[in-house]
Image (cartoon, rainbow, N blue to C red; front, side, top):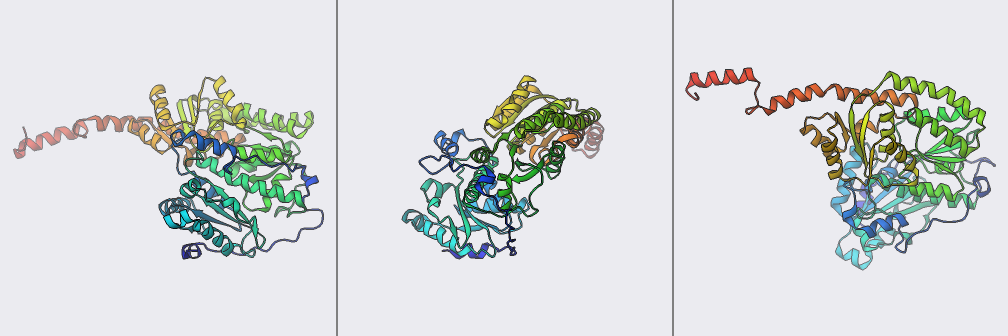
Length: 494
């Protein structure tokens, strides 16, 4: 094994496992899980990933390397080591991006060359790395991620031991030609972990969540969200006499058991199809969409109540509590302007719903993610409002929509924002300025309107700059006259 791995992986501080009192462990009967497993293709990849591989690289959206999504999930979990297996340039780019987004731990790396790849020595190096890292005093799990070259070459991570010294070994393939977006790569690792946790829960007692179990029936939340949003959703669920369960992707392994122990799951971000399948196998209904805007909040409360068997009187009281406040928040912060929206985070459709309910003239929503069952409600609602929804959107489609609809504000990815500003159109980067803001309930309406209206108000500044730079010499008229006079005086012009 190369010394690169040993040198680059920093051990996190030890965490002592808590003794689980009798009765707190979740058994298969308590979870209601079945012993069925998700089907996989002949390649060992999940069927949706294998299908994407068959479709060819040219069918993939133009997103960042998808492996960043799985890497991000692993790096955010306590007591979890993450190791990349791939080309050195890919590993460098992924670790750079991970640390740019705030990762505070090292990334493991198993290097290879042509000889170790074709002789099978690379797999031996990976296995040796797994044994070197599998220290139960430091880790609950070691995640090993095959990038493009080892995935295409068939390096068989599925042959690694399921656990070493009590430390789980999770091996996944996340090739750029097979997993369309980094948002869906988050699902690849999250689903693999949830599957392993489900299988462990079927075998006997498991650890309870760090904060203990909720006294109310809990609803697990699916999708990375702005920190305020889970709290807002929790208050909405409390009004239904429910509780918010763990958010998947989780921050530590034991939270996976807590997610499975809930009565239902809410797919706030719909691209987590593998995670949704695992909840379905565990016998947990999954509710799509999110509590955004007035209509969205009402529909979501109704769907959660139906999935969890909440009495109609409790549902009515919850709606009477939250819907008027949401309507007032929208009324107090209207958005007036034409907008096109695109992104690759997976939350584009629910942001579009909130924009429409806030009064925006939204014409186009593009998402790099694919169509799933959990996004169908949002897509149908947007299309009923005359919005064009484009799944697997390309940069060319996003730019064509901008040219077609001549928006007052463009919300999009970095190249879309760049093109918009070159056209003197105010533009907002979706990932940092929109998806990182609260969206749910009354707080979401006011927060989103604040940033959109600020961009709308800047249109006059863009017009002034555009007019300035359209002059042949880049000068204001007064400056041009002064330059001409100086040129005549010095004999350099006439």
